[in-house]
Amino acid sequence: MSFFSSTSGADWLIAGLGNPEPKYDGTRHNTGFVALDYLARRWNVSVTKSKWQGLYGIAEIDGHKVVLLKPLTYMNLSGQSIAPTANFYKIKPDHVIVLCDDIAQKPAHVRIRPSGSAGGHNGLKSIIASLGTDGFYRVRIGVGEKPNPQYDLAAWVLGKFPPEDAKAIADRLPDIEGACRLLMDGKLAEAQNKYNH
Image (cartoon, rainbow, N blue to C red; front, side, top):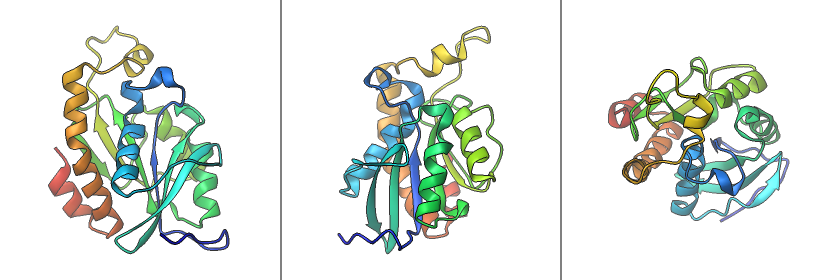
């Protein structure tokens, strides 16, 4: 694999959202980390270099130079890692793909969008503020709704998955990889038609 100097750009940035401490492993909010770790394994990349308040690695996939990033800022400040990384590698917002959890969807449902509001997701809110636009791809991975309206949202997203939900999400990870490849090839409609379910 060839690495490029700091004066070079990259084609794409894929960021998985989550919280960095071990106590958050396996929680709903860390689904983006799980998805990014899967991409790193599939693409044989170590996401271990430290910069821009995150861990990153560089892959060459289907002719694209791709930065894989795990922000370590905690979820609500994700943009403070993503924006400087994109800026350094001269990656435009419309070549940023964000992998994140979505409480509005059933566990393991996937929704791919090229833009849009944060929908109450504080990680996306931070990225929109830091990039100055909502025009970046997001692959939202369902983690299920709160069991009732009174249930504390933070307690829900920081709660651990029951085994059946964790397995359902693990089973969708190859689809998420496929979606990322299609998005990088400019095939949004195909990615949505194939994987939005």
